[in-house]
Length: 229
Figure 1 (cartoon, rainbow, N blue to C red):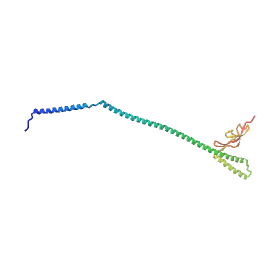
Figure 2 (figure 1 turned 45 degrees about the horizontal axis):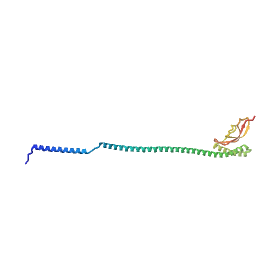
Figure 3 (figure 1 turned 45 degrees about the vertical axis):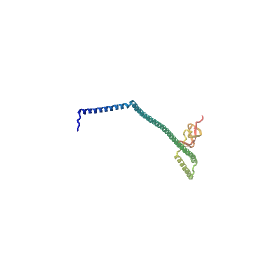
Figure 4 (figure 1 turned 90 degrees about the horizontal axis):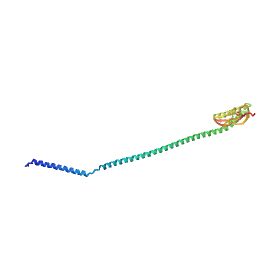
């Protein structure tokens, strides 16, 4: 059997349910407010902590930057030192090169001078042989065909000797008629005369020789002097 429900009672029941629901919602809101009241958020502290973190980060970056700057400065100092060392080594190299070049030139010059001195000494000894050939040619007067043949033979040897001396640069001085030069001539006699100017070589007693610019033997000469009045 179905009981009849009064519409008024039904409406009252629904209102009671709605009121209870509203009451429960209000109670929940009050609890949330209470919980929110218990939570204390310090915004200034939070912001200061964030700022401190940012400052620490900037400090770390600054420390890294200063460390990099120190490393770069150290490398620049090393580069500067290397440059100084390089310039010093380059200067030493240039000095050594110049010293070696001077040594090489000096050694070469000394070698040439020594070779020339040896050559001059050797040739000077041979000049006496040339003198003897010239004396023989001036004194010997061939009288027959045999003597003429001998004369021609030693004249041929003399000619070969003179040609050999010419090939190595030996040349005789031609002193007669020239002005006396103490660098070339040696005055062994003086003759007063008006036929030649004072200081003129009027006779070559012993022939002098030169090798290039070097005197092998001074010419022994007779020099004119003015007559005494």
